[in-house]
Image (cartoon, rainbow, N blue to C red; front, side, top):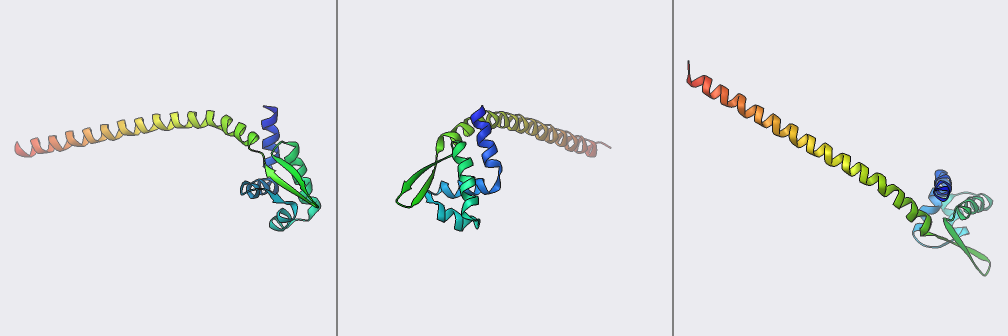
Length: 125
């Protein structure tokens, strides 16, 4: 759970979330991230350090450039955690669907009874 909390904290900051979205498309050099985020390089580097400490990104050196890539493991852990809640929501939606079906069915039966009463009543003065 502590690792997942670090993931949430890292992703809570909009610029870091944007970096993760950019890295989802593939590894990127810092310069690319600087241009896309329209931030200064020291700011982007600080965000990348936080993401790295949370285990969300890896870095490799390519000559003079640092290339950052997304690490899927923390996001997979987050997905597994969310799956528990997804199952809960789906169960609630299924119960709601069943309730709505019952209400529709009851309403249709009620309408049929009213229609039948009117039909019988109109035949008999």
